[in-house]
Image 1 (cartoon, rainbow, N blue to C red):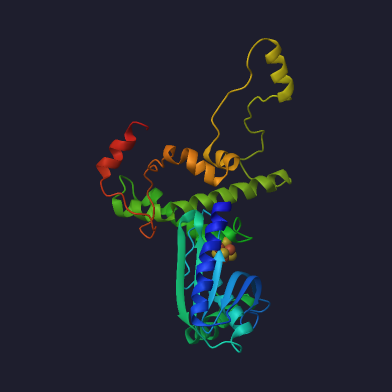
Image 2: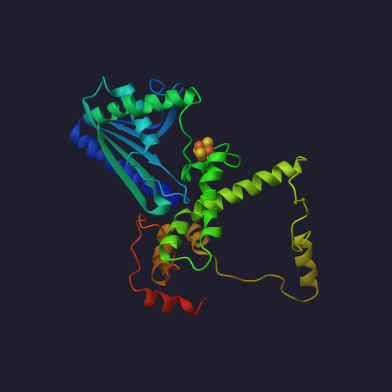
Length: 306
Ligand code: SF4
């Protein structure tokens, strides 16, 4: 966690230095409330870092999450934050462009998108305001996708169910083997399907615990494993019996770094650290990681493990 925030800090410092080259008195704001209620009723957010200078307004969002890779291009959250920052500083600085960056260290993702002030304001008028009005009136269309996982009604939303159940058609339309195009279509939705199914399961469990009934289902105790009731008493008893109750293991890298401090860790152990190749993973083509080209090599390397 500290490494992630350190690298974020370094990134912000570099952006502040760039801002100083453009303008002698840039402002740097951290955890700044950004109000964009002019376009979305009651809309506001908190900008992790906003750097205001002549010419460029910079908005940076630190995302610690690992699950979803977030891109900044046409990202409505970032564009709303930029509008909020413009509201505060447009009259004080000569802002022409807005640079929006998502800094997501655990995914090695630094995604930057630049838009002119005029384009941003045009989007706010022609898209954001109109969409917000539709939503406020309960009109408009539901749009299911990866973002559903953050929605309050994710477990019970019919649109999300329909979207995920589209896959069910493969049950009856393809009686023999699926071809690669069909498998690709399934892969592109598999993660969302799994996420939706587990949201529905979790929701149903909570409802069942509250007394709701679902045809064909009941609540039972899950599997559990035995455990000690008192570890100290166990250790004492085994020691008295003449045995060593502890297993001795070398600390893991994170705990060892904490014990030694980063500098001493590097000095003592730098030459003894390696990063093994990760297990092959099938990901969407948009993923930023480099493709493993030689399928045969990868298979050779990993087949012994499997
Ligand atoms: S779960 Fe339904 S309401 Fe929520 S974001 Fe998805 S489609 Fe929209």
